Length: 193
Ligand SMILES: C[S@@+](CC[C@H](N)C(=O)[O-])C[C@H]1O[C@@H](n2cnc3c(N)ncnc32)[C@H](O)[C@@H]1O
Image (cartoon, rainbow, N blue to C red; front, side):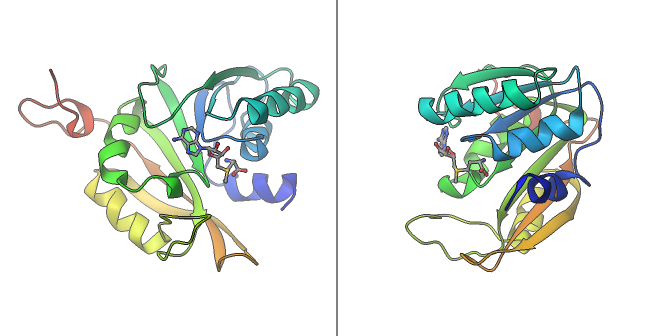
């Protein structure tokens, strides 16, 4: 896949404009660059990966190609405490398949997205894992899980064939304007201590 393929996967999911997005498990930045291209000048991207070498390469390329987009890099484990700013959108591209217990992690991450903000997922369209893609989630399974997580309007935003595993899809969902909360719980069911 090249840059235009990455942009094509995100185009229907990412509206242009000055906005703050996060890219979790951003690696060398294939989709960080696509996000920057779609959002445009003045946008801010919080880019999280535990691989410092990949982040350095990403910073170089972003600086060369999209210097007018603010890149806020964090070398961190995205399953830990991240202190994310309020987000207009959150992208996970080929990184959620490393997380076995998605229903435990996602409510915490979704809590960082503003009401009516977006969650964008790029994943292989399979449910059977392998050593490189241990816990994938197909679009069908994701749509059901997104509904359980109270995300709205989950829809397919793009798809490309993959020689490695079936195809790669992108999906976009919206965060409700009133976060789902139950007694003793915050947004998305996170526990209030
Ligand atoms: C397959 S690469 C995808 C990179 C990029 N998003 C893309 O689609 O080209 C997965 C990335 O997620 C990162 N990653 C996996 N689990 C992580 C975790 N728990 N915390 C931070 N980064 C993680 C890896 O270091 C790697 O850079």
